[in-house]
Length: 122
Image (cartoon, rainbow, N blue to C red; front, side, top):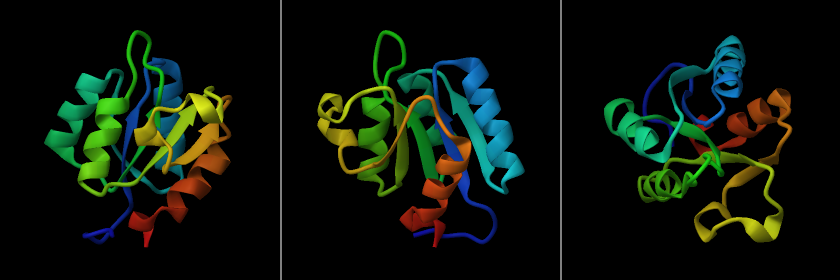
């Protein structure tokens, strides 16, 4: 549940800088507050520690690793997230299976709708 007034605070974990900044701009234009962008799981964990968030957008594949540590941390803190990935359903690590998912190439309109439907958006 969202604990503060104001726009939904969203963290983006995406290793493609161009996609990440485009997402950030489009989410901000849609009324979300983007707390930051992380290009690795390590940076995502640091960003979450420093800024917190109401929800997150996680790309599963971050080059030579995945965002699995971030997904586990968000789940432990009951922070919902949307997974964006080119993975097929059977390829997702267990920590991603209960999350809202969108396939790449990503439709930002569908992402915005998913974020608004997350429990923290209430």
